[in-house]
Amino acid sequence: FDTDPSDYLAAGFEAAESNGKWTIEAAKEIIKYGKKLTKSGVIGAQEGNLSCKVGDVILITPSAMAKDELKPEQMAVLDLEGNWIGGPHKPSSESAMHVAMYKMRPDVTAIVHTHSPYCTAFAMAGEPVDIRNSAEFAIFYRKVPVIPYGEPGTHAIYKGMSKELVDYDTLLLENHGVVSVGKDLCDACSKCSTLELVLKTYTINRQLFPDK
Image 1 (cartoon, rainbow, N blue to C red):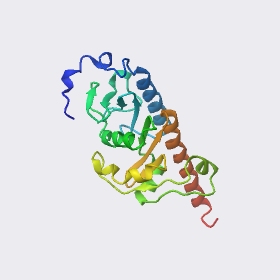
Image 2: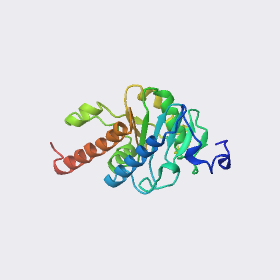
Image 3: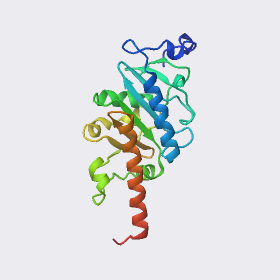
């Protein structure tokens, strides 16, 4: 990031603006869903990240901070090119992935990335998800592809993503986790949470009834 945090650190959210007004409500939404995901076990400790695109800025959770303890004024603010332009804390290490995904899908305004256990287990195995006997899966996903491994926090993490993101809103990141895009945070969070529950049920089914 090229911007010196001291240039805006004291001003915080009062100085940052998008299209003539601040996006404090978007920050509150990030906090709301960060708490929900943490409570449900989809996000643990300091892992995962959430973002919203509002006008010509992106609000994203700061790096290495628990999502259930954040305050609105602690959100990091990026421009649409990924430059850190506001907020007192360094943006998430996956900021480049979020920025790239917003460019790939101009229709989305929210992105959620988690390391939820069942999704991550499938991602570690490099297994795309295509469960035909789940109504929830058929409605929400059709298929969840796996993006080849790229080192977290680098541009390599989203290499090859654009081809799949055209057709699918939820992707597994090999050896890493899951990421979903949506029309808003409720939509993106629901996709991550629902997939986790579908895969949990599927795994239990395979354990209890391996021959069916």
